Structures are given as C-alpha cells and as structure tokens.
Amino acid sequence: MPKASELKKGEVVEIDGTPHVIKSVEAKSPSSRGTSTLYKVRFSNLITGQKRDESLKGDDMYAEADFQRVQVQFSYVDRELYIFMNTEDYSQYSLGRDILADQLDYLIDGLDGLTALLIDGNIVAIDLPQSVTMSIVETSPAIKGASASARTKPATVSTGLVVQIPEYIEQGESIKINTADGRYMSRA
Image 1 (cartoon, one colour):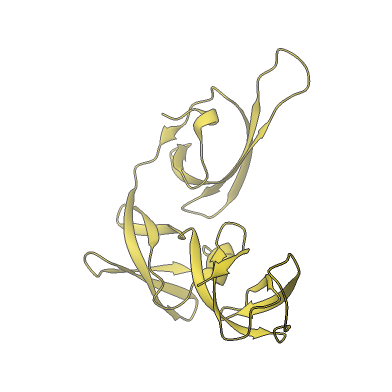
Image 2: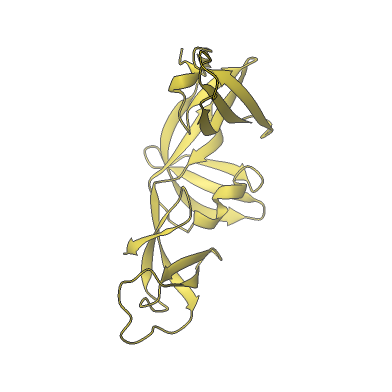
C-alpha cells in the first residue's frame, strides 16, 4: 500500500473500490513550523474518466488496484475509436477519443512502446512512451547561418501538434518530442 508521499504519475490506486490513475502530484510545504508536507494529487477514474483532486498528508495510504499492463501498438482509427494491438498475442483493444483526449497529439500509425492498462481484460488507459518521433509537415524555411542558439520557430507535425523548434530545422525533417510536456528534444 503506497503512502501519499510515494505516489507517482501513472500509478494506479483504488479509491472507493474503483481504480484511479494518478495524473499529477504536487508537493506543497506549508510555511508554518510543525506542519507536514501536503500533496495535491489529481486522479482520473479509469472507468468513468471523471477527474478527482485531493490534498493529502504524506502518511495517507492507498490500496493498489488490481490491473494488468501489456505492451501494445497503435494500429488505426475507426470513427471515434482508437484501435491498439497487443504485441504478444495480437489481440485488439479499442479506446474512445474522450479517454485519450490529451494523448491524441502523439498517436501516429504503428506507434510502438505503448503500455495498456487492463482491468478484467478490458483496456481502460494507455501510457505513452517518454518520446515520439514525428515528421514536420509545416514550418517556415530554415534560416541560413542560424546557429544552435535558443531562437525557435513554430512547426506543425503530422498529428497537428505545434512544437517550438530551433530555426535551423527544415520542413520534412523528423524530430523527437517529449510526450510529458510536448517540447522538442532533438532531431531524429
């Protein structure tokens, strides 16, 4: 049973008999002496998708949820459903667009390295890899003589996500993007 001080983003815990995934954890140290650190945690219900914010003390305990993690690959989109394939037994799972809301910008056909969370054999969420490689479909022309300085320009990748990139990178190049914050990491 993890304590509130040990909770990390992406872990799954049970609250009121329902599995919840941790979306964010923020530690707040009070200014008065003798008080304990408070943890502001955002949970997302894996069954209903409902968000839940709680302020916890460091020694509050949570039960771990009963779930299974499997490696999947993003296959295709069928209207509002996103289809994923288990890389071990080739079974397919589908998730609705509303459940994947903040992850849609990183899903490209054939994307590997995804982890699916299964509860009773049904997919309820996915974990993205730390970074994805995407090609730039639109950006302003590269500036000749531009150095690797901190000057950037906006670029649109294949999913429609707009990323700030160094000004020497051209349209058609592939770049690595951090899925946690949506920032440019490097050329691919």
